[in-house]
Every structure is written in C-alpha cells, then in structure tokens.
Length: 179
Image (cartoon, rainbow, N blue to C red):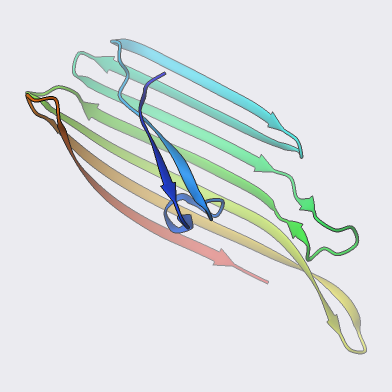
C-alpha cells in the first residue's frame, strides 16, 4: 500500500473529520504512488449490524509527477438501543466522498501535493413528541452536511534526514438540520 504515515488524533474532532469522530481518529495518510504507471485498488466491506463500505482509488505516475482520483461510500443501518422507544436509537447514516490529488515528488528535495475532496454526510434520526390532547407524534430529524476541502502540502527534505512539512488547508461546510 502507499501509506505514508499514521496519525492518532485524540479528543473531539468532529468539525474536521465528521460526525463519527467524537473521541478522536486514527488518520491513515496515503502517499504518492511508488511505481510509475497506472495503479488502482478497491475495497469492499460488510458489517453487522448491517452496514457497508466501498472505497476505490486510481493513480497514474510518470517519473516525479503523479495524479489520482478516489471515491468512497459508507452506509450504517439504524440501531435501536431500546425496543419501542425511538428516541434511543443510533440513526441511519450515509457518507459519500469523491476527490482528486496531484503531486510532484523529489523536485530538488521538495515534495508538493494538492488534494481536493467533496464529502457528504447524511443522518436520518427519529424522535417522538407527546402533544396533550392529540397523542404521540413521530418526527423525522434529517441532518445533511456537505464539506469541501482543499489541501496543499509541501515537504522539504534536508540532507541530515529530517523533513519539514508545511500543510495548508481550506475547508467549507454547508449543512442543514430540519425537523
């Protein structure tokens, strides 16, 4: 695989990594393709309670220059924590991601990388509300968040083996929660 490094980020990081990152994340950062030519990989996964994950990547490398596209989709079925009470449930969740990367490696000891991603998180929650004289009503609580991320990274490699990484990130969120 083209794993460059693994970061463990602790604490609440939902704003940066999405709604499932309440306690932190293990961030696996992929590097550029190591070999010239075309490379591709696909990963599919099924889960219980019912869920699914599909990821795909394709890269092309020509000497020091490379480009890639990546996409993923994830689905988690809702999970009831207590029968008969819909307020105690983990909502149905879907996440879609598509992106691209461009880069140049080892240009006089400097690596450059530009990455753009679009991420859509969707959750469909339910709650119930008792209205005096009218009864109990079930209420949909859909939540949609679109994230646009643009990342640039420069890495300078020094002769003593050390590396200076200078990342630049711009992220914009567009969300909607309705009742």
